Length: 368
Ligand SMILES: *Cc1c(COP(=O)(O)O)cnc(C)c1O
Image 1 (cartoon, rainbow, N blue to C red):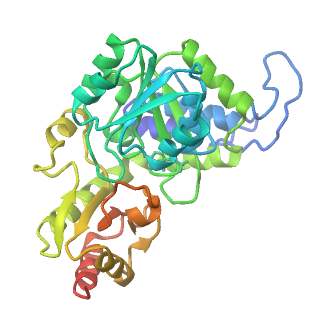
Image 2 (image 1 turned 120 degrees about the vertical axis):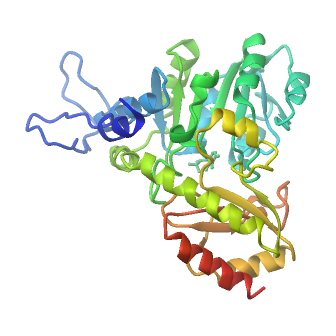
């Protein structure tokens, strides 16, 4: 099946003897004992199984595990490592996961945060106990691109696991497992959910191996699992993922071009732009460039706040991946330790008509 077909049919597992056309939501937390039956909803339930089967298919993995948030998914990978293991992660790693490594695993795991756009930094950070290399591409919020195939070679040579946060690209545009990664992570809160109303996360593994079994234990025993309702709604949202992503990427490209030509804008970060430093690598590993665009407001952070306050169709809120456009001055969300420029605005371009979005930008820019 092609991705569009799989997205519609792959998550619809009919579990009811009345044969409804769409899988029902099984709210029961427990199951009547019988041979081979499910036992308890934290361990497995029909809706989570259906979602996991769908996610594994979309990312070309052997298995998937769904979690109650993207952070819970990422943290499960760290929890599955032996204490004393060393992680190499990007210096601009999603701040919630970077905080998790620094705060939750302090004294348990070692970590080096490096600029992965230069692979010599990854090589230089390797230690005998390096067990995990974590990649996020495109990255948040600078849209930096990491060469997944090249990092996979380094990981393989060192017998380390390569995990890739694929939240921004989604499997519609990038399949890290085909490029040499071992594990893919998603915040399904973003494009999978697509409507800013479901919190969730996922891991997909290329192989069902010992490390994956540990992740399964973290999921089922740790218990950071999504509800049957959330799993149902995710399967429903994913049916339109491919078409939403095509729209997001088209709009991302149009907004980036508009901003490049705007006199009040100092720099635009979008991997689809030919002058983006990671453009060629992005083009070699992605089939589309996504719907997140960041840019610098020439007059500074106050002007950036003012611009945002005058917009009508872009909601001033964190997060991304919904059908509605969201915008924020990112450093304000990331807090005082952030490396993000203070005048950087991140936009999650939605699926409203582009004429309306660009007209809205025009009128808001005219007020700063
Ligand atoms: C949002 C996000 C996360 C964390 O996911 P939650 O669902 O918010 O826990 C991780 N990585 C990236 C790239 C994200 O955008």
